[in-house]
Length: 169
Image (tube, rainbow, N blue to C red; front, top):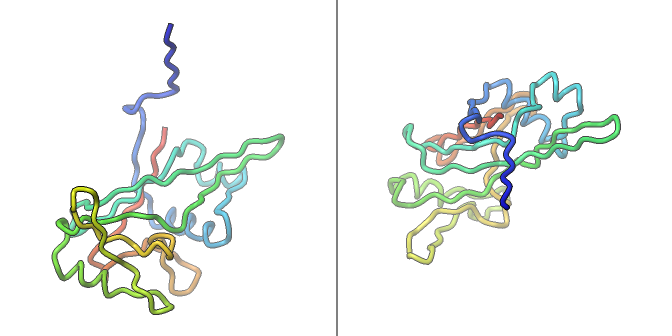
C-alpha cells in the first residue's frame, strides 16, 4: 500500500514579484543579522504563506538564470519566527547566453580586496559558465548607498538585472 501526502499541488502555488518596499524590508532584515521576523512582523508583512523566494537574472528582458531561495519557519511555545538565511546566492551563467562585452564586464569586476569576482568554469559536457568566485559566497542580492533604502543589485554595469519573486501557497 502506497500513501501519498500533499498539502497542495503545484497549480495552487502563486509566484508574485516583490514590490520595492518588500525588497527594502527583506534587505533591511537580512542586513541586521539572520533576517528573522517575529510573529507580529510575520502578520504585518504577510509572510505566513511564503514557501520560498525565486531570484531571476535577466539580460535584455530575457531570463538567463533562476535560483530558488529557501526560507525557514520556527514555531514554538509562544514564539514564531520566519527566517531569511540569504543575502547572497550562488548562480552561474552560460557564456552562450551572454554577449562578449557582458562576459568581459563580469570578468573585470573585482572585490574590495582586488580579487576577481567571477571566473569561467566548464561542466562535464565542456560548456562554459561564468560563476562567482567561491570565496565570496555568491552574488549579493541587495544594494544600498546609505543603509536606509535597499534595492535589488544588478551586474555587469547594470546590464544583468535581478527580479525577486515570492512563492506562496
